[in-house]
Amino acid sequence: MRQPKWWQDAVVYQVYPRSFYDANGDGVGDLRGITEKLDYIASLGVDVVWSCPFFVSPWADGGYDIADYRAVDPAFGTMEDFEALVAGVHARGMKFVMDFVGNHTSDEHPWFQAALADKNSPYHDYYTFRPGKDGREPSNWASIFGGSAWEYVPALDEYYLHLFAKKQPDLNWENPQVVEEVLSILEFWADKGVDGYRLDAINYLYKEPGYPDVEPLPGSPYGFATAHYANKPRVHEHFRTLRSRVMGPRGLSTVAEVAYLDDETARGYADPARGELDMLYLFDVLNVDQQGFDKFSPLPLDLPRFKQALAHWQQVLHGHGWLALFLGNHDQPRAVSRFGDEGRYRARSAKMLANAMYFLQGTPYLYQGEELGMTNPHYTSLSQFKDVEALDALRAGLARGESEQHWLELLNARSRDCGRAPFSWNDGPAAGFTAGTPWMDPCADAAQINAAAEENDPDSVLNFYRTLIRVRKGRPSVLWGRTDFLVPEDPDLFVYTRTAEEEALLSVNNFSGEERHFPLPQGFAGGELLLSNCGAPQLDEEGVLTLRPWEGFVLLRK
Ligand code: TEU
Image 1: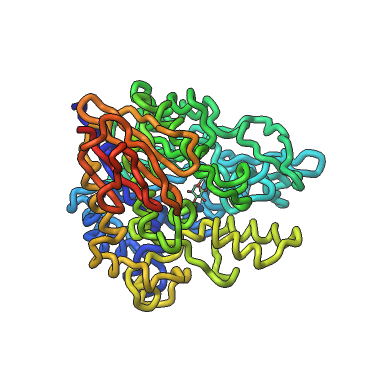
Image 2 (image 1 turned 90 degrees about the horizontal axis):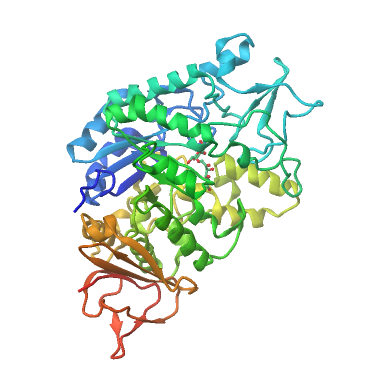
């Protein structure tokens, strides 16, 4: 069998440090908290720990607004705490990956402060400043979080570009000095033992000069300008620079957040023959239950579209790149609340979702709490939400005359805060997350759904994940097999085969709360049951399966 790279035969555990575990009782999760829980993380059988940002930040966007790239924010601890964390990860045979936020800095970063202070400062060209046009913004580009992507600076009589929040000015990667700064930050953490980087919003590095106006969104003067800043050819050159100068020589892995991709660009980024990036972290699957790019216009899950999005990338990247597999992260609602059943079949549907995803080709990314089947927090007041994106959307919605009740429901279903509620460790105060007052309220159901309760239950979601992670490891069909979706148009069934030279497997999943029937595909009768969330499959004499609500299992071909 072909030998996998370490990140190919791996499951990555994603930690959002502020919400994982608070070791010092100040209400905020910290690096020592992660270190204290490393035995728990390792007990899952995962291979890699990825931590979201813990650098000095005014926290305007959950730490993705960095004011000092080389220092741990005191809220999370010290550099010694960081070193202990990496050592603890390595001592358990795991790798450590961290975020690199290169598209923008915080507006409180000294570079930006210097840029604001003096138009002639070399730091002014670290960012994108432009004069206004007819007394308005240089163009009508919308920020990804809403409103204009340009912010006026009266003292300079110029606007600066921010694709995200206005406290996140975009860096100008066309300035070679900026690229040198970035490379030296990447080397700094590599020297401290980091094994790889998750490159944040990295496909937005190059913006078309001229900043042409775009079609405005309904009811807004601003429009999405991704056609002018996402995945432009120049980005390939930047990726090759990162690879040749740092990632390659240091043997670091890369996983890149790259939305809005076409097939050719995807292969260009990820084909091992070109070697720009190792893994692509794509969003198409998570856009199928909303209207267009508006996450606050939810739609019911359209399973055929969902399968189509997965099948597409399985096919395009087979032999031409490697995918990150995920249904949740710190920007997404909880997978079980969104795609499964939070009620009666919570545990079973949470297991099925994992069963459905983890046998596809790629590297699964397990977001903290998903292994418990944690649900959305179900807050009762708008004041419990914290995220900049949620609060901006709320403000705009209320200004349009929409009701608070409507927005409470929307934010409870779709906001990024849904995944940022504290990890539920036990049924104690603050869900065992902190001895103090938690910075965010815990989930309403933490007393029932928590790690301590699941630890002792052999049928828990937690113990299912442990089995799942063990059985997928090292399998040629999982690693290298071709993926074929069966019944792509079926609205409830999610079925695929993975076929390699050495073996083949079948993953069957019922995405519904009803019994469903499905003829067992040829060759799988009498196959070995690798995993199941319901026990042995129910098969009649004609070879037809009766699938229970939210049933999921995997069979190996005989
Ligand atoms: O997210 C980048 C990004 O483009 C997201 O807006 C993503 O497309 C969206 O959440 C999908 O619903 C990254 C980080 O993950 C996020 O937390 C940051 O806010 C953002 O970059 C800016 O750094």
